[in-house]
Image 1 (cartoon, rainbow over the protein chains, first blue to last red):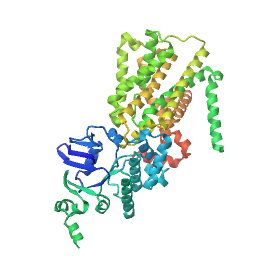
Image 2 (cartoon, each protein chain N blue to C red):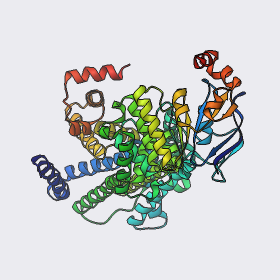
Image 3 (cartoon, rainbow over the protein chains, first blue to last red):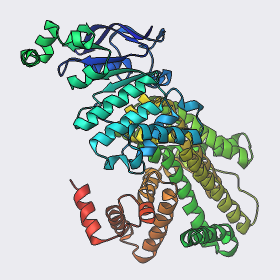
Image 4 (cartoon, each protein chain N blue to C red):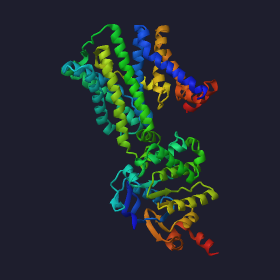
Length: 248
Length: 324
């Protein structure tokens, strides 16, 4: 069943089509990867889905409800959470307070009492592995920790669909592996994940399906191991050297 | 319970008792001064609800003070309402105005919002000045006098101001603990991130603006009845708006007690400078404000909370940090 369906999704910036007529379907329960070179329109697509930016044309449905005309906060309350590539923590709040705000709003937050908010925040922070830093204000945290806060905030909302925009960029090898495991664990509780990633190894490892974008258009879609053999994808994104390396 | 806790309870309890018995033991001059300080403390505390929490810098909170004063005066003069209804009316008018004006202007960001709030005071000043048939124009309005001895009157206005200010601080405290308050702080820290989490940012900002305006309206209404005469040039003076900002900055922007501490520090310093250096009053007070901002960029509350030392080294550091 499709959890999210986008039809002819288009986002124009004064003439430039950052997202051009993209059809996208995210199935309930999957981890869908979104890859492509810089400037391909991946982040813009996530911005449009989460209503962070208004759509130019096309329609997006979430659980058969049209969401492309909704406001950002309404989309958040329906159960779509996202992280930002350039992280947006609440800098003057502690890590715990940051996550608490997530736990107070979102899809589930309005039902929670103060005690439950704190419990949820702590639980999510333990899971993401940032609990030890709970009393440090966000401006004192390193980038990888800020990324974890970003993820914890989104998770605390209790989303059905999680949009991750390059959560692994800037992490070291071990941290990338950790993050991959974490994404799979989140997914195992029934959260559908759409993940933008540059680290191809990571995306191949976690996602069951990938979409490749270039110049705002969707150029390929399918199982990761098939997509990387697609000549169009190799030409646009991976480059010939990737093929040669893999042939050896 | 540790020593520090007992110390704090003793200090605050003592101050609380002192504030309550003050008008009965203090002289008329001191009671009047303290009423005025409480008035500014209340205005600063209500300003803090919108600007301290959401980060939307309002330069024109005097407009709600003035509207409250005029609404109360007109209700009491034209409709012969008792003061309590005039007071409530003043608060409602100010809040309604904040709500309606907030709908368009709270969509503006940063400096644009600040400039517009500045303009609104002047526009309202002009409107009240020119609605002569209703407001008496530049001549102003004289309110009905409250019956009672001078002592009774000074006690009445002292406690009215104290009650409104206490209510403003209590509201601020309750907001801080609520979901609403966390939403407001999320808006201040990063509005886009707040929206993504599901915060209805526009609604929250407008509500905070209206709540903030209610108390300014109450205080304006009380001020009008207290002083018994209002004119557009007095109640819409830009100085009200600016003074309360300075007070919040001195005390600590966004903190619960900052506006109160700031109001006391500012007013007491102002009194001292009046009596010592009459000719250089403004200049010396201004110089002192600059020093305070440099030494304590986050206000006195930060000094109390973090026990940061006031030192030359800190001064130089701040100077470097803020003069880039």
